[in-house]
Image (cartoon, rainbow, N blue to C red):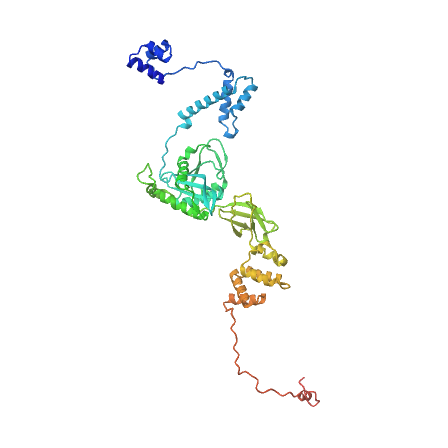
Amino acid sequence: MALLSVIRRWHFREGMPIREIERRTGLSRNTIRKYLRSDTVDPKFRVPVRPSKLDAFAQKLSDWLRVEAGKSRKQRRTAKQMHADLVVLGYDGSYERVAAFVRAWKGDRQREQQASGRGTFVPLVFGPGEAFQFDWSEDWAILGGERTKLQVAHTKLSHSRAFIVRAYPLQTHEMLFDAMTQAFRVLGGVPRRGIFDNMKTAVDRIGSGKARQVNARFAAMASHYLFEPEFCNPASGWEKGQIEKNVQDARRRLWQPLPNFANLDGLNAWLEERCIAQWGQIVHGVVPGSVADAHAGEVASLMALGRPFDGFVEQTKRVTPTCLVHFDRNRYSVPASFANRLVSLRIYPERILVVAEGQILCEHARIIDRSHHQPGRTVYDWRHYLAVIQRKPGALRNGAPFLDLPEAFRRLQGLLLKRPGGDREMVEILALVLHHDEQAVLCAVEVALEAGVPTKTHILNLLHRLVDGKETAVSLIDAPQALTLRQEPKANVARYDMLRGKDVRHAS
């Protein structure tokens, strides 16, 4: 192109003859005349159409590419694999020709999609209180000094574009239910529709078109909050483009640099404050004012939250002979009366309830440990094993559940186990917590230890005084010195001989 510009400048501007241009450039005079007569500024060279060995297989290869485009990325055949399949069918050409055909086919398909279909979109407008959008993302934060991967729930009102971000360790049903409850609390109410993708915590099976088999617990949550769930088409993130954009913006606004907090509760409190503060800093773009101004006008169109949804996931477990239930690689203790029986676990984001026969048996703080190179943990409650050690008091000495007894009980145990029968006496003292307040029993034990009388009888006496409201400290008696024996009686055994006489009448 630069040479063509020089030729045109020499001839039309400087009047240089064609023969001189031929001598300087080495081009033929016919070529120079063609360029000058056609008034060409940008030369284009036509590639002649030549027959190829691939022509007979072009339709077959196009059909293969069309089928492969509908598969997931990991299941598609490569160009080398299709070349090998063509060789089996009789193709004797080179792989480079097949690769060039594949590149051209993909380029034409991409241009076609950008011109119409999936490459073309319609702007969406939502009314106040009409809909919200929800999505998950993976982000990182420093919790307790350790870099931790988190599952982050994003919820955004489609009209006012007010958003809330909340972090969780897992992307499970109970985490989703809690995220919904916290989002509606912060946003000030519940819209009429919710727009989701086809996440496994909501959709069990994807049918044709918009048909979905919705998870039973998710449907119960939507029925409780009275919003209509709506699911996007597979791999169609633009159908909830606001929340997809919010995920990208949140990484810049909230997660860079990495937040540093002692625990997850501190991080979520900070995220809530930052999101609400950013509402007033972000211009809405469609309605006048900021996102906070639009949200203030939308709150009146939202349904009041009301009673929060009891967002647990229930599983049936059998209690082991060691009074433990297993969940998520960890073990939690259960009262001994339910050993070898079926119980229900109600799983919340931060706790686990054990339920049987219509009543709550116990509650444990949930352990979530994502490091699979370490063994699971066991959480004991020594009170659950009191019925066992009453029959087997010897198990108290090395029982794993009793390694974390309160300090007063540990000191008392160290004294009693040195005596014969001390293990049974210690078991009877521990069993007092089944019928009395544990703090009252601990107080009685501490008073007995201070008094130097660590016995069951004394502890029971002190406990009854505490329960009855009497003072546990016994005041010393100050005996006066005047109480002394001044006249000693005389010993006269002859009086007993008189009783043996015959003349004495006895009562009959």
